[in-house]
Length: 333
Ligand code: SAM
Ligand code: SF4
Figure 1 (cartoon, rainbow, N blue to C red):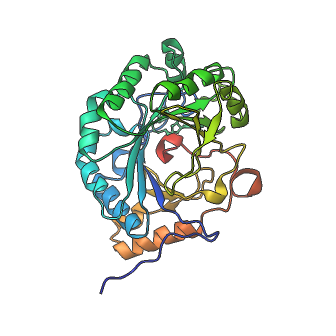
Figure 2: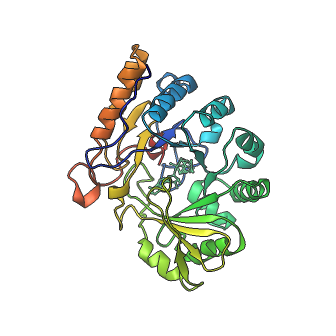
């Protein structure tokens, strides 16, 4: 008889159906808000989960009710062999949605493989529409490549194409309206993300977030924002559409608008730890027991324990977490 496993429902009755998997801690960029310019200590190759291990853990998670998986990093498109993993992962029975967050530098050349692997949607991180500013933010002169990748993804019919902009005071907040305008001309979903302080970003850089309420105020100069209803797989994005626009506008506001009460996420780090909350350093090791011979059922119990350990909330409302602690590129954002 088939064993029915319990679902990942936490103490606060949140159904954790969304797993973000960081497949590598390495990255070809050095975004101001994520990594220092001279990089970070890299995990040893043997400390990073293999694709077989990722697949095994993803299968267990899906059997526990996860129906949405996002691959992230570091930069997922720089890990070799990704396209051997992707089709199997995308076809896990029970999985409704598979997607990826990428900086887009290697997007264009990989688009056919991404589509062939069954991935219909993609998130691209892009914080400016100016070439020189892009170089300043990321440490690399790559704006044209990313933009080319986005336009090619649109031509190939990937939908939705989400563009994530981390808004930073005095750095790119003069481009909020230009980004929002993209949703009037293209079917892109533009998502404004509040910069989260802490982590391992460049210590010398004084970055400040811009509250999404202020971002919204700028955008309504372009027209009325009409609310779009969230679906089960949307998570914490507050969705809108400028009247008549083919694209959408979304707000992700971890600082000013705690979305903890609807947080449906678990994170699997590149080193094989489960992290129930981005803003808490509580992690549970899956890799060590897995490599010591744990059964699928043992590993499922660890997933359930991680769900049980998910804090009610982050920041001021919780004593367990406050700002970003840990390496964003290994956790996956
Ligand atoms: N390299 C890929 C990319 O940049 O899209 C995937 C990994 S990156 C860590 C995932 C997301 O985290 C990106 O959209 C990035 O903008 C976001 N992120 C990183 N550090 C952040 C911070 N301090 N505050 C807000 N968002 C951040
Ligand atoms: Fe790399 Fe993404 Fe971090 Fe930028 S945000 S440094 S692209 S991992």
